[in-house]
Image (cartoon, rainbow, N blue to C red; front, side):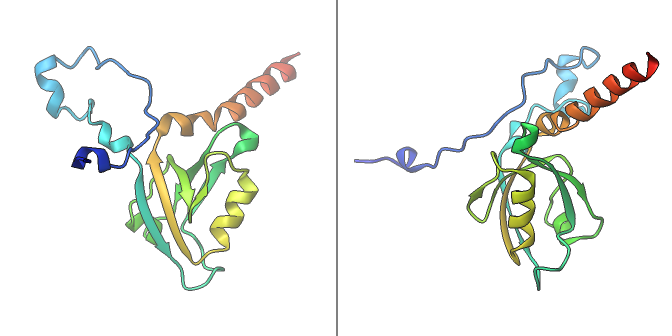
Length: 152
């Protein structure tokens, strides 16, 4: 006989590495301090449903990343007052799935194609700022190597 616990869906979430609380916040003040948040629920995947009247209508957000950059697809900008912003999409969110298409190992151009070709977009996203920051690693290393080579 199965129990309610057996029927629960397992949620897999990528969590950032553990960071110790800032030393300047005493333990008894951490729970209500804005500089410290131990609630991991903010990193759990969430669903958003974006509706457009036609496929040529703007999405209301930009993306960056992709398999060719060795990272996932991340929201790089959300236009103010767009439906995407009103639904809670945020810069740094990783797009995990769009209309049942896995976005964790997809090329950037393919991801753009999926997003732009649909008027009804069911997305699963997750707040994963550490992964989003990785999308800038290549840009930073290229800029630093360019600066070093121009000094020679």
